[in-house]
Length: 87
Image (cartoon, rainbow, N blue to C red; front, side, top):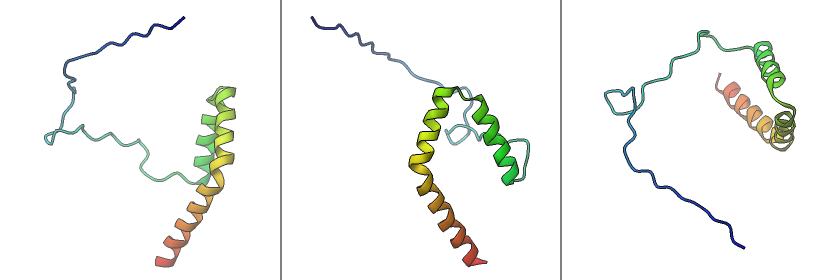
């Protein structure tokens, strides 16, 4: 016995509500704080986001961190070395 699938074709135009003179979307407003977050501020933001995640998403994030964390850390160290050599 097969399964039935339905497809629907939607035609029409999509109009943006806010357009700039160049035809692209306007710029996104900046966050209210203008300076960069330090290491403690970043840790507090990450902790706050982590606590809001459901357990299933926490497991997914932990798995991704184990998989990709070493590569990202290596890239961060290389970028820091390149910045330090220019000063």
